Length: 110
Image (cartoon, rainbow, N blue to C red; front, top):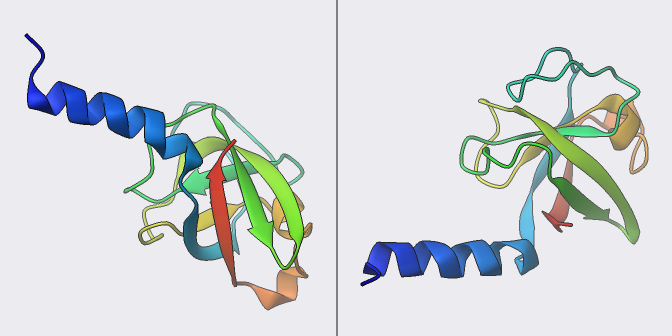
C-alpha cells in the first residue's frame, strides 16, 4: 500500500517541471559547485536557492522581458531566497548588463 507521503511526492515530481517560478536573478563567479563540478564565468550555469536545490544537472529556462535563456544547475546559493537564482556572468549578460546586478525573472525546469 502506498503511503500518502509517497503519493504526494510523486505528484509533486510530475507537476514541478511545469510550474513557473518567480524571483530575483543575480550573478556570481562559478568555481567548484555544490554538485561537484568546476565551472567558469563563460559556462551557462545556475546556483539554486536552498528551497530549490537538489536537481543537479537539470536545466532551467529563464525568462526576462521577452528573452529566454537556459542554464544547467551546478551549485547551491545559500543567500538566495525562495525562487531566486544566481547565474554565471555568461547567462546574466543574455538578459542585462552586469552593472544592473539584479533583475526579476521567471524560470521553470526545462
